[in-house]
Length: 237
Image (cartoon, rainbow, N blue to C red; front, side):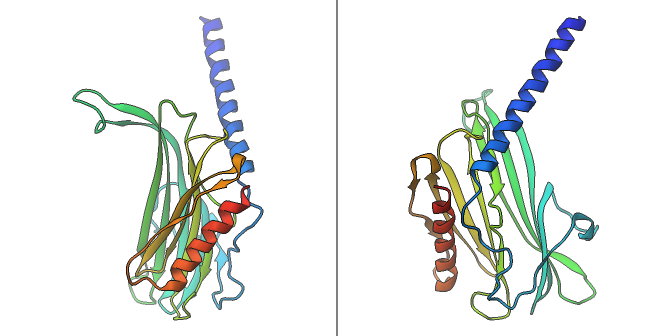
């Protein structure tokens, strides 16, 4: 019995080390040569990084904080929080017949914006966005993570209301060679837009990004996310 317990513990330890190494290898692989600046030096926006203990205790958010930024514009004081939930198993009952299901592992990220308009209400949540990468049983493991230094706070149209750009990568390869999906999102409270596409770093292949936007989206917004996507994707070659 003791020998069996020892073997089980050894297997769990080795499995944890291998998965941890794969994840670290992927994170090293995805270090871009070109980095977006977290604070736009050409913008009047004065933003700063918040430590975890500086985040108001009344904030309700899910996941582990990966990045937290605060600044002020004409709408009030704002705090952006980017989180990840890690990876966990899931079952999908919708893809197969009665009594059957598909399973795998998935990872999630959340993006929150809290705004204080200098009234009696204090900070209120003004934006919540979510994304997930589900990987089936045949996939090595999921990966979803923010691009290092890929968060930008700026005012592209100089109207006093800031735009936030967040960049992240998803994959089901977990450190193995293959295809990755890159998403660059922009939001300013009234409208959101997204540039997305795939690239294969090991082969130097980069897709042309697709920009999802409203018909009346300002050109400076769509141009910024598309150019940002191209720069990040090409930096991984």
